[in-house]
Length: 159
Image (cartoon, rainbow, N blue to C red):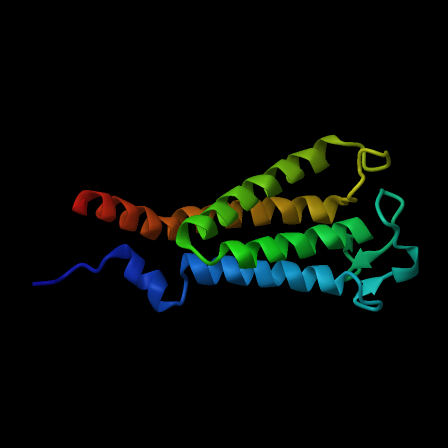
């Protein structure tokens, strides 16, 4: 006789919980925001502007950044850490944040990158990173969020 384990046991064994994942994503965004202000890690640091497509600064020599772009990463990281406190909020951060990144991906694809509409700024590498982040965050929030949904459903049934 074999016993089937609950699907969530596998990702819990790997340390993947809504809390840990939202916290990890928040830490990564904080790190990226800080790294965007470090000369050398950000090439052409002297060409960084507050905002706009004119910023010549490139995080890791690949991703176009500005002061505003770095601040957005820092704020997103703080939001991730704050929202990681509860399963419901961690799920909202991952799925909602992922949706925001998919919207940014679409926005980055449709704007002319050489105009004022590119105020954050984005380049092609940023756009595709936004796509990957959006899909990954939504996927993780939905997959790991089943635990929170199961707990909510179980709690309602007990009442």
